[in-house]
Image 1 (cartoon, rainbow, N blue to C red):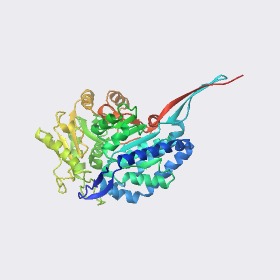
Image 2: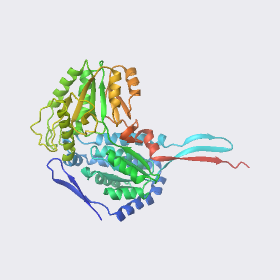
Image 3: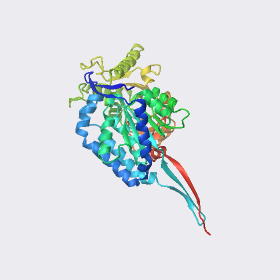
Image 4: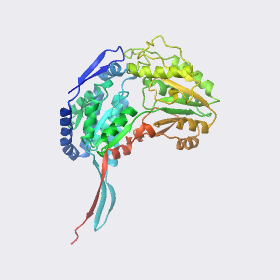
Length: 460
């Protein structure tokens, strides 16, 4: 029995789009089509697969004038930022560029008697469960390398960004990628879990909540299906006493507030050397007070509503609890704050790790900032988290940053930058942030399996 998925626009609470989910039988049929199409797709020359995928990417770019306001309607990002095609194209293009090397045979040796090598072969059918916060870029992280490597792909997108998968599928199909090779599907949770438990897929890539990741792992238990998970985050930044203060403030506050704080690798807690603390706060407050909260379709809006009112309720709850426990709020409530999805961006001091705002994922426009006396204190605080996606360090001393970075429990160490996904590096996390890794050569390794060839020649 199908269900109706509804995208509720954060702009005004109206239903922006709705789609019917596939029945369990129809979903199994779609997965069977993907499996049947996989061998022929993998048999195509690598360069042909690369060209088709890049043509699909370009077709998405051609839709950008429609995509940008559509994203504003679905998840609230202001149109002034122009959508996601820059990062979408960068990631796909990089993965296309390294495919030949990343997927090349590993030559072990050949002599008169034996030829030995390891080939990387596609896994089969890959399910991509994508999130709403960066709906195009997070999806392409897996879709592009999975297809290039010879897998078929089924994309299940978040209800909040209901139309993204349709657009991607339409674009890729128009470019010549066969319909059964790349499918967009609307599935409810039970049907998704049933497909995973029934071995419909050979790999599942999930980006979302810790609870969602647990559900994926439970469904895959005993099936030996590969699982890649990018889950929660509570990313820290550490500003050392020799940092470029202006650059640190501008970058870290943007990383905390951009996209209304709804970034996987956004900065959610900052530790500033005590000698710079007051100056940092003063500059940070000035930046945030200059934001314009409002309708994301207005080109003057610099911070839009949160994607859903329930997300805003959680952020307000964390802020309220922190204030009740002694934290200090530095931003007066904006006139446009409606008590719903439109939420005043907030800077908190006087915070401690006893407060949820410094422990739980906020995923909203709030950041707690604490003074620290040295590296030891900063490292201890940065590691005092159940999450580990990225950490941002600010110092002029590269070697010091590397020493500190070696001791941080995180997936990525940034120096003098934050909130950026470099496709040449593995995108990965530790602890409750998840497991596995996307992009880079390692992304290809996780979407293929090694197959060894030990070939004895007949010499007589």
